[in-house]
Amino acid sequence: MKKMTNNIVFIGFMGVGKSTLAKMLAKKLKSVALDTDKIIENMESKKIKKIFESSGEEYFRELEKKVALWLETSVCNTVISTGGGLIHAENLNKIGKIIYLKSSFDGIIKRIENHPKSKEKLAKRPLLQDRKKAKELFKKRESLYEKKAGFIINIEKFKNEKEIIKELLKII
Ligand code: S3P
Image (cartoon, rainbow, N blue to C red):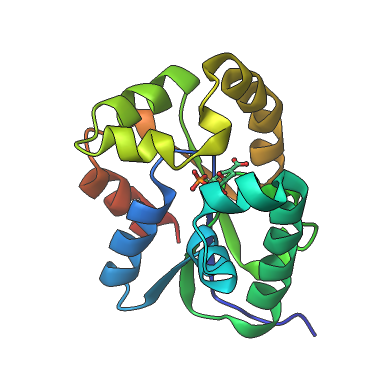
């Protein structure tokens, strides 16, 4: 029998607002939010940037897979925000209901640049440092996110995060 996890899983590119929205939605649902990057940082006692620097991307991807397996077997009734690359975990669809938070690349950059902590937001993401490479990664990832998504929310259609939450509450 298929395990019912009741988790909501946000996927999407870096900087689209997955963790902020997960926290907001969890509050509305009187549930709990978990973020895969935060779990990895706790596992390693290091920030993502440092993990990339000291152990490399491949090592980080292995940690993501480990976390994805743990989420599948051990987590339920939770709103989960994922790192943008967690879609490569083969068991993703077993973790919960997958919602793709979609935006154009320019929309994401604008969102980060307009954030009061924009410098911090940018600096903590190794794969956003080279804008050209980041755009190439975005193009490769778009179709993957779409394929894995149970629902797609185009965040650029909404005037603020509160409106996105209203829409999310309708579809979950
Ligand atoms: C990554 C996304 C980041 C973080 C890491 C790699 C990616 O998370 O996991 O820097 O490969 O897309 P956010 O999506 O929360 O920025």
